Image (cartoon, rainbow over all chains, first blue to last red):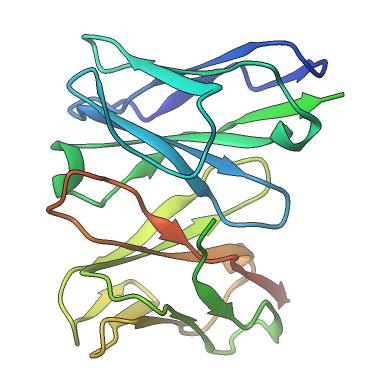
Length: 114
Length: 113
């Protein structure tokens, strides 16, 4: 069974730039959730994708957007990067939309905005 | 954003000791999860709880879903050095259209051999 994978592992961007992060869900899972984890904090929910549509969103501005593809993989896009966007971005996969809370996380992408 | 209250924030214990940590919320949840995160990695699911009052074990770990549905507890028995990491609680309400988990700030566990 293949676990959740994320790419890239880390990257450095400049304020104002745009970034795309990628996630492949665990085999058998059809739902992907994205979280932002600032240093010393717990993960904060950004949004969830199920059946290629957004299935819930946390308190994040519209410049955070996402996609889910037919193979259930997903992308997180962040436009107009700000210094506060520096964080670990985690992807988690699960099955059956909002019906299951057993979410399995990938290793994360460490984003640094300078 | 909303976060659950976890305590203690950190613990320094001797190998072999038992550990207890807890998590409280102002809102009720119908699901409580406990995760462990090690440096440079994503959180790993340890235990999932789905019923108020439920007590579930996973090896040396035991977690309980509080009867008020606003709290949960995690115990680790006979700690070993590989228990080192940050333990997060997370609450959720499955069955709705949203699939978000609300996390605590974590309890950092250090184990002295």
